[in-house]
Amino acid sequence: MSEVRVLIVEDEPLIAEDIATALANNDFNVSGIAYSMEDALDELKRNLPDLVLLDINLNGGEEGIEIAKLINERYSLPFVFLTSYSDRITLLHAKKY
Image (cartoon, rainbow, N blue to C red; front, side):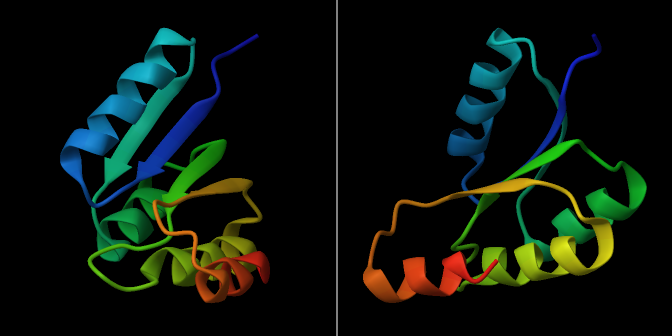
């Protein structure tokens, strides 16, 4: 079986690298790391992964939720939200996707 290709969307480089290392150590293939919404959309167009790990809060906003909406509309790929925020409003907003 081939490795699962994962796109990491995380605006904190150290966190993104830690995630990438953990994935690689568990036989996942990191297809790319995107640090912004623009980078993520470019990566999706250029190098379609099997799964996206998606930070909800990119650059201080909820761009991750916007990316999730586009993933559902354009690519029908599975994604998992990652966040250090657990406030009720953010979680309710994320649950829509």
